[in-house]
Image 1 (cartoon, one colour):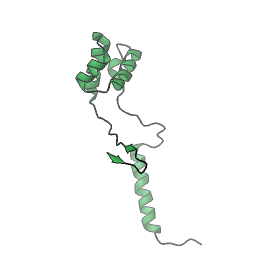
Image 2 (cartoon, one colour; image 1 turned 180 degrees about the horizontal axis):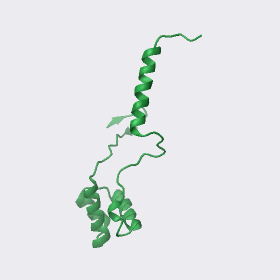
Image 3 (spheres, helix red, strand yellow; image 1 turned 120 degrees about the horizontal axis):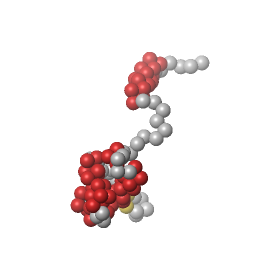
Image 4 (cartoon, one colour; image 1 turned 90 degrees about the vertical axis):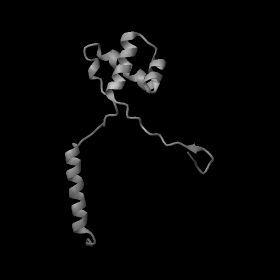
Length: 105
């Protein structure tokens, strides 16, 4: 942890990559076995708020669709596919290579 110029600590947050099957097992433990969220979260090594969010998704989806809850962060407002993004990056790099140093006007 480093200290910023005003004396307040700056914290680097690393997003955990908990496997989907572990999250789903913890969610089922809470939803189907009626256990409390905090002990189950501690047992599975998941933040209790994260587990609570997935339990709500599971309960909202219903028992038949519960296995299909999405985990992780989804990209919002994505316009291009990953393939198109890659193609655009290659095109921009090629154009900058071709026109580097050319003066306009």
